[in-house]
Image (cartoon, rainbow, N blue to C red):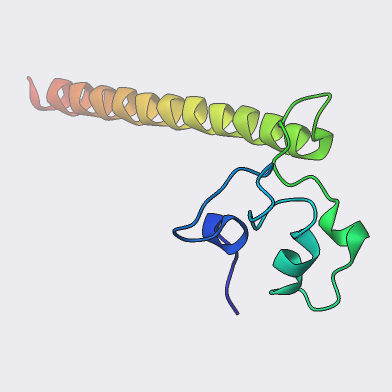
Length: 104
């Protein structure tokens, strides 16, 4: 199984704007371009927007996932920093208390 990349739709060396009739992404050529990987892809399949802006008004699902992950990553980073700080503090306290016990 292989995943699509930019060249899968836009071509390798003959990249043209969508307005060019010879372009692989020209609306008239999309069924053929999509059909190369998706046999039987028709007009409905080829009319899907691929390059959407990820925003609250654009691709909402992707926007909510991005928002969740950004918050989740921030919480993880803060948690890691607090955990490391607590470990360092506990290590210093343990070092001081063992030094105090050794001193007569």
